[in-house]
Amino acid sequence: EAGVTQFPSHSVIEKGQTVTLRCDPISGHDNLYWYRRVMGKEIKFLLHFVKESKQDESGMPNNRFLAERTGGTYSTLKVQPAELEDSGVYFCASSPPGGFYNEQFFGPGTRLTVL
Amino acid sequence: AQSVTQPDIHITVSEGASLELRCNYSYGATPYLFWYVQSPGQGLQLLLKYFSGDTLVQGIKGFEAEFKRSQSSFNLRKPSVHWSDAAEYFCAVGPSGGYNKLIFGAGTRLAVHP
Image (cartoon, rainbow over all chains, first blue to last red; front, side):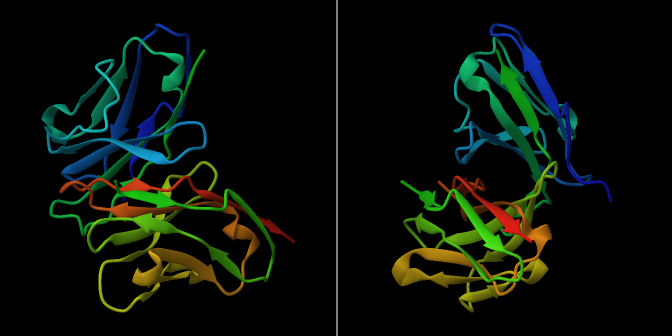
């Protein structure tokens, strides 16, 4: 069974440009999460989808970040326009339907560098 | 506010030596606690978790962790480290705010000397 996949693995853009990150969860996982790790600090929650609905977006830093999950399958996270402080590793995770007891499976992350 | 502290940023041990990675948490109720490991180029992999019951939990790859409520700690241990254990280790607590999100520590990077 394929794990959580993320694309691209690395992205280098200039300040002011737009970048779109993609996450493909494990098939059948209704729950999809985005997290971010900035400069060796802690991994921080961004948002949580249940199918195509946003369950919790309390971690989204500002309105330059837009997450979508059309059809409840893959998800995209768009940053527009990108700023220097957006650099970091963006992780996606998914978990089966149900409550918190279900393990979150993480992808390898997308390393974003904003110059 | 809920938080997780991993006091050690880097740890170096010799292969075959024992290992303990520290984790302290701040949480208003009974926490659910996790340890994840990230090897280079890989996603985070769950090593073990504590929800309730026996405070000593066994995980994969020979790791164990002990929940100590009085010390607000959930330290990860391994009796004999292998070179393949070199990775970054993250402690996490949840859920938070009634939702499924995890609160992570800053991670501990483990180096293993031959």
